[in-house]
Image (tube, rainbow, N blue to C red; front, side, top):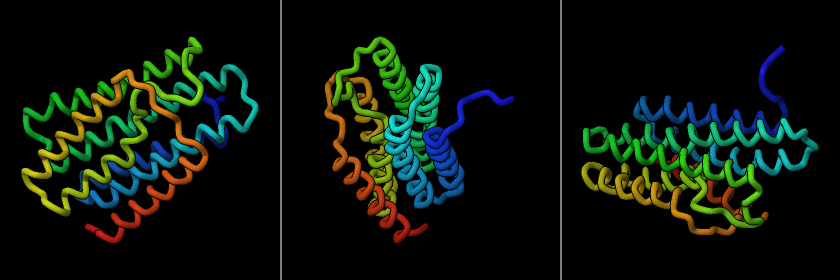
Length: 203
């Protein structure tokens, strides 16, 4: 009766999507603190949905669907959402438009390349090629702290550097090690600590 595939891993993926849309909502209302927290936990959802998917037996069609929906959600969460937040924080000039567009395009290119390599079985076990877009969920909330520390032109300059650096990192064909189980645990602890910091800072 309904299109799509429905399971626990998918529910976690869509929770991340809802959180990223919540980040837009709060960023555009001037609450970069809440937007940062939602972006962070959207990233945590992306860390968890893969292991959950691998724990269950899935058909070939479910695996393909899972790969596609995960990348679509990642583009929204870690491509579009940081761009929306940066726009709200002052990257709203005519000169900033190309940078925002390049950043989102680089995220899309990284995700499409990942799907292509996975389809042809060319992904190396234990490594990534290029920086995974999920890392935006930690890098940008850290960068947004400049809003509390310096603001103004220094904030805008810092965000431009971060966006440019992340754009290059997404598409640079350099192998990166995948995090171990301890690495996942560490990233979740960092996410928790950064979230508490932002909630403590408030509006």
